[in-house]
Every structure is written in C-alpha cells, then in structure tokens.
Image 1 (cartoon, rainbow, N blue to C red):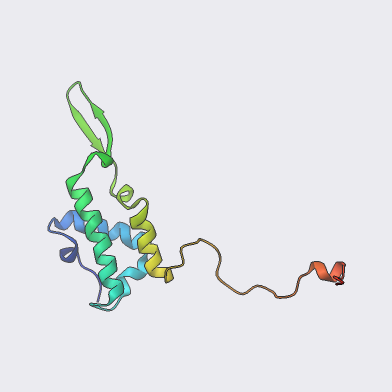
Image 2 (cartoon, one colour):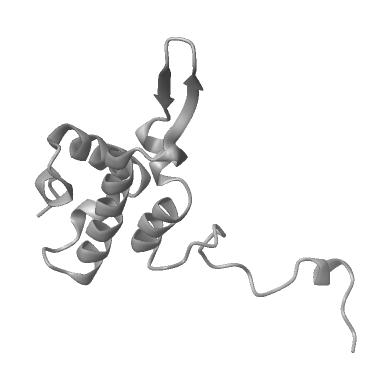
Length: 119
C-alpha cells in the first residue's frame, strides 16, 4: 500500500502536493509495507513538512512588500531543503547518504603494472 494524502494532513491539496514533491525526491518511500518502521519514519517526515508549510512561517517568506502590503512564499519544494530531503533519501538508501558510489572496485592497482612495487 502507499502513503495517501489523508495520512499526511487535512488540507487535501497541500498534502497531495507534498506527496508529489516527496515522490520526486525518494520514490521508494511509497513502496514500504503498511505499518512498517520505514513507512512510519517517512510519514513523520512528511507530516512535519506539512505542518511547516501549512503554518508558512518566516522561513518560507520569499519577499515582502510594504506598499500595497504583500507577502510571497517560496514553493513547496523548498520545504524539503535540508534534513527532510536527507531523511527521505536515507530511507531509500538504507542510511547511506554519503553521496559516494556504491559498487565493487578492482583490488589490484593498475599503477603496479607500470612500476612494480617492491617492499
């Protein structure tokens, strides 16, 4: 089963937009088994983002005008900057968020074919 908007928050449109952005960041989050620890962790992150965006505090203000007063807010994607984005990605990578490639590398050293190492 997948995470649905009603599990994230009451404002359906906002919750759906948060889910769409999260799907772009870490698609595996939507494949976790129901009530698994990974799904609970993902929901905690998504609910926190929802609460912050819903409140639209000063961290989401992009610009303010005094004449004909107005406030412009940053887009939803910016709500995932920092820890929320890292947290969602960590759930997909099993906690490995170093950004380094995973794989196997040759044990022998090519330079040893040119200059034999003698010890």
